Length: 203
Image (cartoon, rainbow, N blue to C red; front, side, top):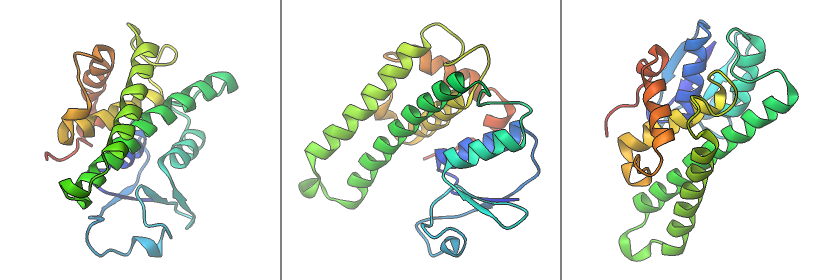
């Protein structure tokens, strides 16, 4: 299988971590999405991550890809089989992904609009989503090692990948002193070989 990624995409990193943790053989094609590329020939919306399976099927969206990988390669599992715990993990993953979406929306606003044309209301709305999402995850984590259950899940991987991007490229969105549990979680996961192998490039 071949995984199309951007080196700075934390959604791509989420999938790469799963593939490494599960020891699934795969190729990685690195793309610069700001330059001409042929990704749309594979994925009509031209987004990463995109996973092309050996049988030619194409999976898009990190959540969909993660679901496939965890079912197809269940050792180790990162999405619980129990329906209630599964729902819990996917809900927490959705919050983590929503935080990253809001960060990205803010960065795009800054990149594509000069100071005079930027929408302060839009930026404040996105910052509110970031802070509310991180607050909810911090409260959920507390002093426990993981967000859900007794072992690492997709929810932990998702927020650690996203905060890995934020701390490297947009540190203004994450105050480790305000969210000490999440800061600890990121440190713990960044020590794993799968995270070391997929660290985002410096800004």
